Image (cartoon, rainbow, N blue to C red):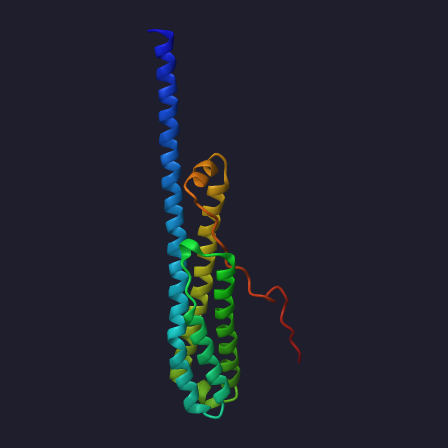
Length: 196
């Protein structure tokens, strides 16, 4: 075999291996990107579950605490605001995620005020309907935390993969961009004050 033919075979084989590797990396990035978008869907599902529970909870409280109208209206307004914000996970920016998170945080605070109001009504706290809704809401909050953590884990895996060499070459060729993370709520690093 001639020396030129051997070199050509080696070059073609090396280029073939590079193409196969690049296809494999591209497909891995697509899979990870889909995992991030699926995880985002789970976050939205859990927030929607919470939003769906709110009207029933407000109606139950309203029956016992009709004069707490401002609190009840505040909860429903926060729910409406949180439900209006939608994000396309494929194009989510950190700013959009922060806006979404802030609206959900406002709903969490409004629900906290609602439960504080409920403390003043022993009959309400004893209501089976109220207890069931409160338990469902607590379970939903746990699911939200889990879904947010899963989203961040998927985004971390994807972000690391598209930044590592030599995969970053393929990622930049096909415009795979970093995904934003959920961050802790503002002020959550401070321990709450307890006074007796």
